[in-house]
Image (tube, rainbow, N blue to C red; front, top):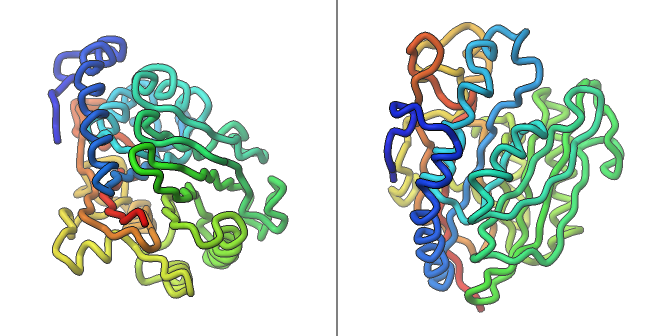
Length: 320
């Protein structure tokens, strides 16, 4: 759904929060009913870190101050029950957590540490009227998952934030893992193996949802290893396509800051669907979409709020 074009009105974030308060409270009640019916809306969104944006050519035209309201609007428009966010620096996290989200969402995070952007995190936001946290924690994708150490020659660290949740309406319990995997293929595979081990160790036989910027496409080894396991982990994009419920079958999640039609040589190296929502039984996908929102950016050019598009999946479940 789309609400109104707030940016054409040059509205600041305070007015956004005031304008949406009643709408969001009403929406929260709607999704509480959906939870009773065995349905949850999941979002994954790499919002693009603000670290170093004055020095890197793509980011200097897409600064956080210019796109932050667009980020908030996209999230509030879709109103997910639970959101896995990737890459926010502390100032970015607080902008959403302390403003627009306070009426509807609660959240938790753990800094990833390391040398580059150590206060960056992968937080989980959840509707406090819909979900209750029973447990939470973190681990790193490293040679020692208990420590934030540079591993496999990557040059930076990555943390997974996980939570155990109960649906308040019917008591359904599931685990949620929010991820950001590395770029190099071998580091990706090492991270996938750690993720699979941690799912077994932390979640056991409970249902699981995985969100994140996984940095691999559907035809790469990381996807193959992750979706061919005894847990029968399923990709919401592929499963929705099988039943005709992929609402954006020709849209990609990564490829630049523009309207995703003006590719550059840099874009070509990261062009694809690298952001994913995975799930296990008894979840079943009801619908899937990649958001294509743009906003009026620097120089009047239509730009995406991040170099990753947010993805949304509605998952059904049966509470035995």
